[in-house]
Image 1 (cartoon, each protein chain N blue to C red):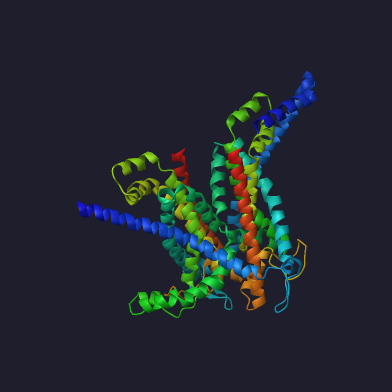
Image 2: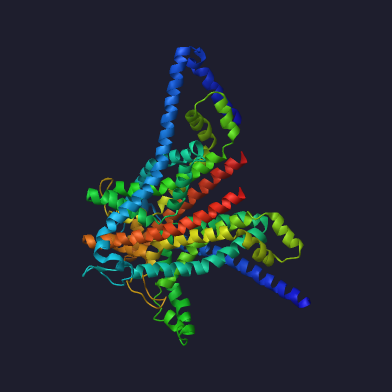
Length: 280
Length: 338
């Protein structure tokens, strides 16, 4: 008997120890990755990074053109993706909450949410780059928009589902048409949550590299022409990190730091929006 | 909030002069206009919802169309052919498929047990005040873009493995048959094992957070009953929580697997991009996504491009099946919870 107890207790201690160890292991990677990133990235961080173009190997320079390129494509992608995502999410949550189409769309959307982004890049290459005959910023923005849509659809639907039904019923009882109720009552109640979705989608696409590789390509020079190849921070990091030149690699680290800080700021911001909502 | 909304609605009733006027004819036109808008808005949202389906359909059609030349040339032997020679235009997908499966397998073999243990810590052992910070930290790990994992893996992790873990593995398993092949060859640093380890770190947060959610959904009564019988924490986990949450955990694992299979940038940095199947997991290899990322813009000729698109199609089909199973299992859990 005593033996059995001892064995059970021992097993429990081992499992507990492993569990704590696993948690430390998991957190250790976060500390390691962020630590290295801060250490390597900060040493290269200067005003120059934000004011100068990407340099040829061996020269000084910054990351201005990829930063601007990334910003333009991100904004464009959000402008394209958000309305479509919100409308589709609205259908899932309001008009067709229980119909067959919605359950299919919901299922497909969830799959698109975690589908490999490189496949999205191939798709946009096939429908835009190949027919147009050249790489372009537009194609890059469209492929990012295709990644924005599922994120926004999902959060919009979730947030609209959280809106209390009595609110809708009260509005209907006043004789308001459904579209009006959705836009002026439900959207207003779910605003913070829907904004969170958009922020999360921006966080998601600002680090995306794979779909840009063969849609927007890259550009060593200053270019705002969306109908031509355009530089973006992730692709420049990719190119610079794999190059043999030390100053390029250093810039890649700095770019990586900028992206990570932006992404973390966005996700913390999104989290705070949600927290605020819960309090009120 | 609530009073605000009320004000808006009353404002509407008061300021909408036409409604107040209550003239039957104008009321009819207004009602018709409202109805018209309602129909338009409904059609718009429905169109957008259908658009999501259209994207998926478009992806499949575009990939199939793009892969036709390669499929016509090589047929199904494309799937089992190891050669990849852009010069002679002889392509086969076996090496990338093999690399994708092996790296994902390594990743899951590490991330699943570790993820489950972390989830156990978070739901059963962790003091309340620590739960939120650790939860947030794990989610931050999920939020780091994959290119960051890539650059970190290339400059920090791979050299580290080359100095420490890999010589150690070679030395230990060198004298043993079979294992000496698996861990054979010089320590390159980059290679299949490194890619698998990085993937493990990347999918860890997904598995952890979903397992935590399904563990938390286990009715406390069940756990309390088991504790009441004198079970240890581990026994409650093993015999009550895990069986109850099994479907959800498998769903989470499949979701993580879907990520690992399709992950591109992090793998591209550290796998070495070598089109051959090596018995050793220390050797450089390639995966489907890494091959596409590395070679697509440099691919010359229709057949080369088409072969790469076919790889994309294969990847999409594999991940689609895995993710569909994951979603199906997780949906079942959600329905049960409410």
